[in-house]
Amino acid sequence: MGFYAKLKLTNTPISMPVWLGMIMLAGIVVNNAIILVEYIEIERQEGLPKVQAIVEAARLRLRPILMTTLTTVVGMLPLALAWGQGSEMLQPLAITIVSGLSFSMLVSLLLVPSTYRYVSRADTGKAG
Image 1 (cartoon, one colour):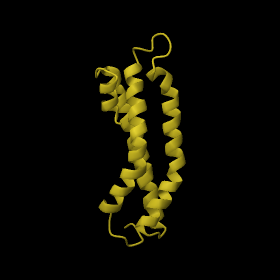
Image 2 (cartoon, rainbow, N blue to C red; image 1 turned 135 degrees about the vertical axis):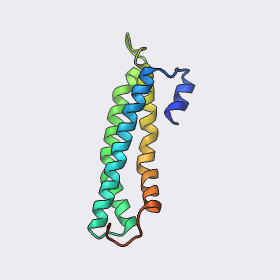
Image 3 (cartoon, rainbow, N blue to C red; image 1 turned 60 degrees about the vertical axis):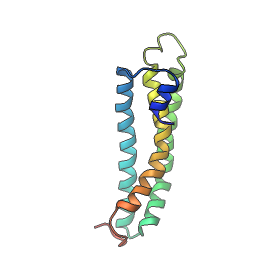
C-alpha cells in the first residue's frame, strides 16, 4: 500500500510535513535504484549475461536495501503511531516515510530489475 493510500486511510491531510516526507522518500528510493543499476552494470562489464548480472546485483543489494528500509521504518514507527507528546505535528511525515518505504522496497527489488531487463541494451555480455 503506497503512502497516498495510507494517508487516506488515516485521514491525514497533505501538508508540509507530507511534502518533506515525499522528498526524503524520493531520495532514498532513487538512491537504492541507482546503486542497484550500477551494480548490474558492473556485473555486465565483468562479462556476466544480463539476467545473471541482475540476479547477482539484486542479491548483493538486498541486505543494504533491507537495512535502510527497516531501520528507517522502525525508527519512524513511534512517530507514525503518535506515541509521545508533540508527535502529532510530524506524524504525517512519519506516515509518509513508513508507508512509502515499505512499498518502495518492493519496487526497488522487483520493478527496477524487471524494467532494467526489458529496457537495457541487448545481452552482449558487456555493457558498452
